[in-house]
Image (cartoon, rainbow, N blue to C red):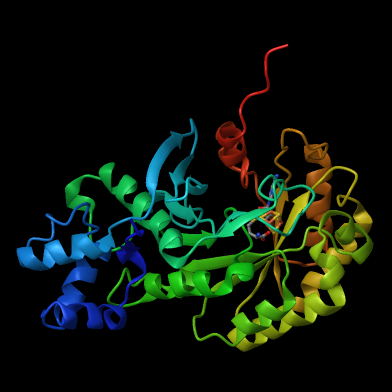
Length: 368
Ligand code: SAH
Ligand code: SF4
């Protein structure tokens, strides 16, 4: 039996032909999409203002969510992780990060959703669990949106009804899970357009941050896209010799190509770009790297987000001790660079990129 199409990536335009063929008025498209995105209906029967014959037509042609929620892990601190199974059995992860608001603690926690765009990753960064097995496949737009839909419903299940509304229950969305979003450009942007659409969740594009390992041509493409998403770039080293040791993408797009692309993005969008920099012991944590990074960040007017490396089973990279992390931060701050040192959240549930998938898909080693 052919797979049903997921309703999640549909638009008023794409539903028009389906409705016309079923003898249904065009205004039903807005009602259907409102059930999907504003009320986040869990079943066709819940869509009470649609006639029964239309609900039957919809059920025949579409699936509501193309993924199964396999596992939800809540950490003791602030992070939760969802593991979803796709129709072909592949697994994908989505992370929810709860953090106090520094600016307004009384307003409750800030909730950030982190979505994946691929199963695995082809970029082969040496420190990253997501890329260890290479790329299995791209996610399609509905599979990216399915993560948002599942996560929204989970958060809402924990929210008293009086506090729920039409809006998605997240403050920010980061495209930083498994995969390289700019290597799956069309599906990623199609999903982000649905999220941003007024007939959909109307989630502001400025609350969306897309993170890339540095595909310079696609950064330039994104700079010309009408959707004003924020950009984060995984720099992780401030010189080509060090960056090429850990990120094969640096051979195709070395700093001389990457940095001008970031600059173009920042000037076209009028937005500050974030440079992500994982601190790895004895690799990129020297004062020399910090000074070179300060120069790059100042030239780009970029913010630097330092992230202590989250150690991965089977990889030898280590997180530097706190004194080294702080010294690195101080070098940046002394050079008047905007920089923060992020203590990563949710270490107890292996919240870093890709680790849950690896643990679930790989059988435990046989007992000795
Ligand atoms: N592929 C994109 C987005 C997904 S990775 C990218 O590379 O930017 C999201 C972030 O997690 C990236 O900055 C990535 O370098 C970082 N990351 C990967 N493995 C990590 C680990 N073990 N510890 C800390 N950060 C990690
Ligand atoms: Fe892919 Fe990003 Fe991991 Fe690199 S860091 S392997 S680009 S997911």
